[in-house]
Amino acid sequence: MPQRIAPGPGQESVWDYPRPPRLEEATRHIQVIFNGVVIAETRRARRVLETSHPPIYYIPQADVRMAYLRPTHGRSSVCEWKGAARYYTLTVAGKIAEDAAWYYPQPYAPYAALRGAIAFYPALMDACLVDGERAQPQPGGFYGGWITHEIVGPFKGTPGTLDW
Image (cartoon, rainbow, N blue to C red; front, side):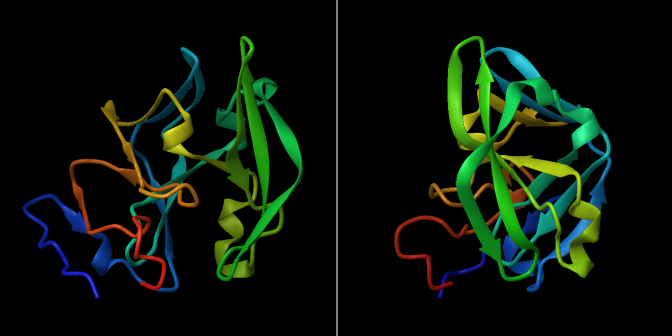
């Protein structure tokens, strides 16, 4: 098993996050930028915190420029905690990011607050910002966590971590 990095002042360790994940309000300034366009901006996000994963921010649909998103047909996944996810493809001025965002149309009861909220993969965006800081993407193509200076790992997603 990995060695937990001890958090410094003002930091959080992903190894202190619970399993099942915790859902909490996030009033920080969240922005998602793709092909030079602000796709989403809010101070009303929710974040999901799960052991070994950096936070994932879910943005209310009302704060997302939905004209740039279209449902990805045939793509879905299932989270044991949150339920069945569906995906969006993002298109801005001819640039396309397939399966760039996801949402839970009918999340399980403990995560009902995620209904109508959208999460974005930072690795597929120009930038995902938390209070102006560019979040680094969680390693691995499957995960969508946002790593900022106050989040320490190690993080699930790199080769050899799937059994964590």
